[in-house]
Image (cartoon, rainbow, N blue to C red; front, top):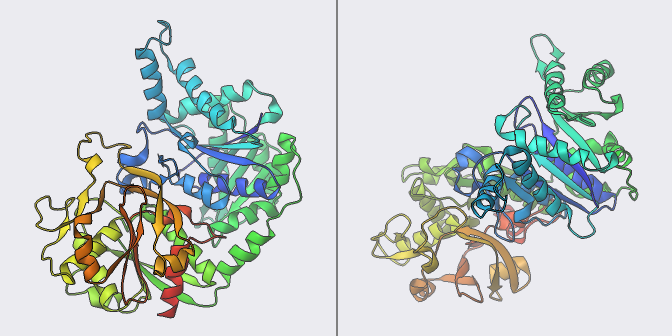
Length: 532
C-alpha cells in the first residue's frame, strides 16, 4: 500500500498548489521513490474540455486522451509521472457515476446521499490511482480553497480516508498565504490562522504548512503560526516567491521538506539527487548566454494560463540552447494589414498556437504571411498549422478566400475540413480527436532534423484536419507534408520548401516538453530563431 499526501489550499486561489505538489513529487523522486500525483477538481463540469480558456486556462491532454486541469502539466513537467484519465477527477464525473449507478439500481433502493455515496466514490477514485504497481507515494491535490461549498465533499472524503488508514500512511499539507501589508511594513499571520481553523472545523489537522510569502518571515512569526495552527515549528515552511517556478523544489529542499515528509510517513529514501536539476535547469535559466525574442500570436493572450504549456516549452527550448526566451505576447485580433510588418520586424521567431472559433483568425494568417515572406523562423501548433495551410493556399497557390470549414462552411477552397467521424457528433465534451497518435516523419526534412527519428507519437486535441484533396496542389507550390499518420494518412506536420525554419504541426508538442528535456520542435525553433 502506498503512502498518501493530501494537499489543500486556503485564503485565496492561485497560490500554487499544483506547483507545490509537482515540486514535492520531484523531491521524492530524487530520493528514489516511485511517485504519482492526481488532482481533484470541485467544479461540476465533467472535465474542462468545454470551458472557455478565459474561464479555466489551458486544457492539458494526456496520452490516453483525457482533457484535464493545467496542473497536470506541472506534474508531468517536474516529474517522470505519466498521467491518465484517472489522475484527474471532478465533481461532475463523481456525480455522473453515482447517478448512473442509482439509475441501474446498484444502491439497492437506498437513499443516495453525499455521505456516504459521493464521498465513497471519491475515495474509490483515489484508491484506483493508489493501486498502481510499485507505487510508494500518491500525492492528491484538492482544487479550490477551504470553505468553498463545492469542495466540501472532497475534504470530507480525505478526512474519512485518513481515519480508514494508519496515521503514518497519510499526511496533510496545507498551502496558505502570509500577506505583506506594505503601508504597515508587516506580514500578517491571521489569514493563515483562519484558514487552518476552517480546515480543523472540517476535521482535518494539517501536518505541514506551506506559507506563501513575498519576503521571509521571522522566527517569531513561525512560532506564532505553529502555536495557533497546532503544528510543529519546523513544519512551517516558507514558500518564498522565486525567480523561476523550477526553483521551487530547491527552495523546499533547503528547508528539508523531503526529509520531513519521509520522517512523517516513515519512509526510507536514498540520498537526494537533485543537483542536476539545479545545474542544468535553474542555473541555466538564471545565467543565459543571450536573449531571443519570440512572438506568440494568440486569441487568449490576455490570460497567462491559456497558453501555459507553450510558454513553458519555449522556456525549455531556451534552456536547451542556454538562452533566455523573451516572449512577446500579441493578440491576434490586433494584427492587421496596417501594422503587421511593424509588429514583427524586431522579433526573432513567430509562434501561432491553437484555439477555436473565427475571432482573430485573419491576424494569425497575417502573422504567418510575415514569417513566410521574411524568412522568419515559424512554429504553428494545431490551429496554427491550419492557418498556415490557409495562408499558403491563399497567397502562394492563388486559392482566393481559401478557408477552414470551421470558419466558412461554403468556402470554394476548404483546405481544412471537418473529420468524417466528427460530422455525426452532437455532444461537445470529450468528442474531439484526443490523445496520442502515431506519426511517420519523412527523411531529409526539418522535422526529421529536429526529431532525429522517423516514428513519433504526439498528443492531439482538435476536430478539423487538413483536406487531403488539396495535397498535390499545395505540394506543387512548395509545401512539404513531412509528417503523416501511418494508419489514417492524416497530415500531422507541414513545412515550406526553401525556408530557414517553417514547421507547423496538427498536434500539441508542448505537452511532452520538460525543462531538462526540451521537446525537439521547441528546441529546434529556438535554435533557428537564434540564427536569425
